[in-house]
Structure formats: structure tokens, C-alpha cells
Length: 179
Image (cartoon, rainbow, N blue to C red):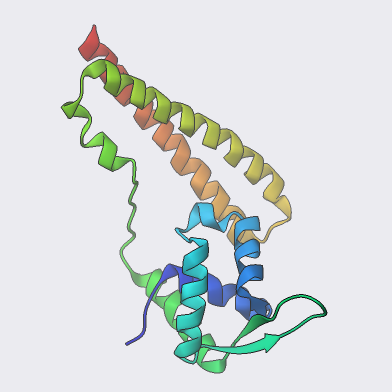
């Protein structure tokens, strides 16, 4: 059975462009701010590359360059290209899931006193404002990126704007409870 995952889709997408080591993929993914957009950790990159290789979606070659330690370079196979397209169709046709880890905190706010809850909400709001500033800078600096990557930055910016509006309303409700 094939493992359908967003991580695999990202990895295969990068490997369509070039053969890369796990380390180089991790740096490329991090450098493109993809870890902010898709839940991908460094260990997951290494683990998924091994699985993709074991399933025949990738071919691995160990190389040694000068005094550097050996490293494994991965390239996508024809089966991997087919799997990439399958993943693209899978994500194009599935119900969109929007999950925010912060909701675990929000559903438990009523279990602490209102002053503490308000301080936590203000901290969250400050984080959203900080993130919004960073997103604006990324959108402005992304003019040279392909349309697909630029639009993902814009998507995050719009979502963050909505979250700021939402948290401001929630803060007002908690302030009213305290007054």
C-alpha cells in the first residue's frame, strides 16, 4: 500500500528538479520556508527518503567527495514520477483540512481564570502580529519566486490576517468578562 503524504509530495517535487542528498533537501526545504507551510521536520525528511527509496520511488547512490564523509544522493525514478502525479491528484481532490495546534489551548481557556486566559490570548495575538510582519516581508521578497510559491506565501498572509481579526474579537470578549 502506498503511503500518501504531503512530505513525500514535497520531497518528490524537489527531486524532480535535481538529484539531492537528504541534507541538501533539508536545507533547500528550510531555505524556501516550506517548513512553515507544511509540517515537515528534519527527521521526517530522512525517514521518508528511506521509505521512498525502499518502495522504488527513488534510486540512491552513495558518493564521496574529497575529504568529506560519504553521502547518499537520491534521484527520482519513473515509478516515483508516477507516484508524484498520484499525490498531486490526491491532494487536488481531497477535502481541505485546516488544523491549528493553538486550538488545543483555546478549547481549554475556560478552565483557567480570565486574567491568565487574557494574557495568553494577548501573547498569541502578539505572535500573530509578528508572523504577519514576517509574511509581508516574505510576500514582498517573493516577487522572483514562481507563481505557485508566491501564492502560498499570500495564502499564509491572508490566513494570518483572519487569525488576527479572530483573536482580537476573542480578546475583546475576555476583556468584557473581566470588566
